[in-house]
Image (tube, rainbow, N blue to C red; front, side, top):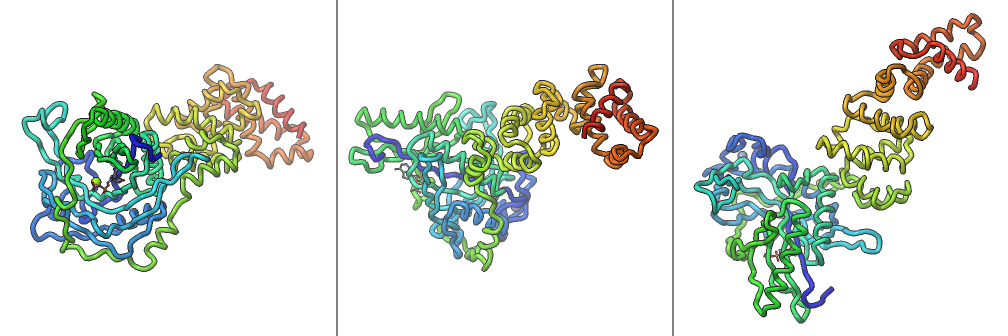
Length: 489
Ligand code: ADP
Ligand code: MG
Ligand code: ZN
């Protein structure tokens, strides 16, 4: 891969940590729906005399992530001031980490099977977010605006920056790396990882190798807010650099902005060097020394890693890699699948139904699996009915839709479908009978052991079924079906 002209990519990813309060003050981190400049205080507005205090939860989340990446956690780290002026930064410095980041090293696995490889991580550190400028132009662009407003609600929101080594080779690999990192932070419960909302922001550094195979001048590309945008931006930028080099010119080290609408990157500014920021240790914050047992506690809270879970779905249940990948993409979805199998579902059938039916509903309704109205128990029971031949696939899908749209439990949905067709019969009626039989096991025992000479108890069972069917079944048929079950078992 060290061929001249081949691409080299390194990613710097900012992950917004899902804490309720900010990094150094008690203000709410809610900045998306909130009224501008309401979640602010003297600390995050940088007023003189105010003092920052670190949020322990932020450190927990970052340490948990570092451990998942196999990084070395620094037990003694510190915060620096990164000085620059911008209207969204009232202190005129950002509190970040410099020479002693929270963690260093480690790696993130990407790819499958033989293609699987680990992308090495350089460092993971904590820093605060800046506020947000709202430009007046309709298209939101600074250059087109008459004035800009500033909202400090986001100022001081905790960010974890994860920097990779320049060892990613293609835009597709970069995309995969970000997807795996996003999945990881969701599994760890430390961030929602939502790129569109800005909870996960990617700065992509890219260069082409020189004639001697050494690293070329890198360009940093910003402003991609989806995986697809990231891949497209890198493809474009690699092409652009190749053209620059082909015409005998030098690639300029700079930061470029991805314009998704036009599919191009444009120059934003020359790249700053670290010394431009005049970093120095923040005198308001003592060094961060992790108490004994802190790291061990985070290790205890570590869930199964998504790549381990995916492998388990394949080996334990024989799922295809693709099924396993889709089902482990979200931790909640993986838990749902595991719930179904625990309830006795056939894994292949469950995987198939979840992928086609459940995911369709989640997409249509734009809800997470946590808000999906059908419990794994009911879902499994429905699949069992299909498997046993009690319900045709077509009818089962109708039942499923009712369970989703009305939030009905399975028997009620089956009952409703029967009722709607006028007369209750077939699978819908069988379902009711099965339910009554399950409930009245005592009565059934008595009938079978001959304690029902006058047939009163049989009559009672029929009555229960008729009541459940709201009188819409044929009593003769009900009696016959119950008789068959009683006599056959
Ligand atoms: P800076 O100080 O300019 O931010 P760093 O050396 O800290 O630069 O690297 C920032 C990111 O750029 C890292 O993810 C790193 O992997 C990547 N990177 C560094 N050099 C190159 C290069 N020549 N080509 C592509 N990416 C690079
Ligand atoms: Mg950088
Ligand atoms: Zn505050």
